[in-house]
Length: 170
Ligand SMILES: CC(C)(COP(=O)(O)OP(=O)(O)OC[C@H]1O[C@@H](n2cnc3c(N)ncnc32)[C@H](O)[C@@H]1OP(=O)(O)O)[C@@H](O)C(=O)NCCC(=O)NCCS
Image (cartoon, rainbow, N blue to C red; front, side, top):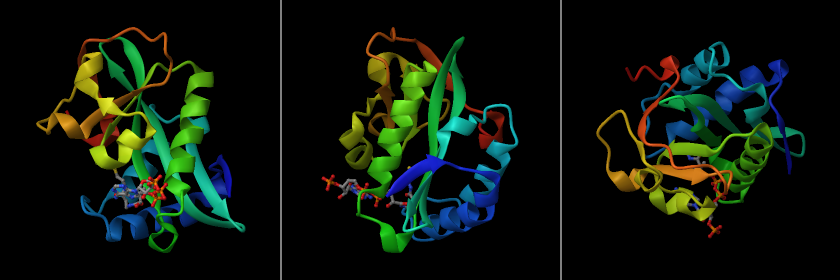
């Protein structure tokens, strides 16, 4: 498996990977592929943190972390994460998350925030974000709004997260 930065030549394939992954997802608005496109064109886009997973030259997974803010602290929002149905449960999602965390640490980010399954993301060190003082801008069960401390020395940050405007949250 090769995890690498997404390039412009990958955009079309990535769009279909995201679409197929979420076609069979438990929680979806059917719009995740358009969100990826919009995020790429927005201010919160971090090219180093839009990654693809290749298996024998074929893109089987994609992850995107974009910049968000808690008061005046830059944090990351992990969304979306997509693995082609026929490639799921083979460690691709795990590899994308871990590589993303490594790059995020090098880039100096303190936290990554995700909204998702507590059973899945807890495998990668995500805890309820409330532990770090990070609050969601919407109503959601506390267990599903999680954060990962990328840098051990990152201080607690108290406040509501502001996502990139492309998420259409505020
Ligand atoms: C969720 C998703 C990204 C997981 O990717 P994946 O490559 O299948 O996951 P991995 O193989 O890396 O799984 C890592 C671990 O999580 C477990 N796992 C996989 N999917 C899981 C799920 N939906 N719920 C709980 N645990 C899960 C695996 O069994 C594995 O556990 P192990 O390390 O103890 O063996 C993939 O199923 C997907 O694209 N789903 C549709 C889109 C979606 O829901 N994205 C997440 C939005 S928040």
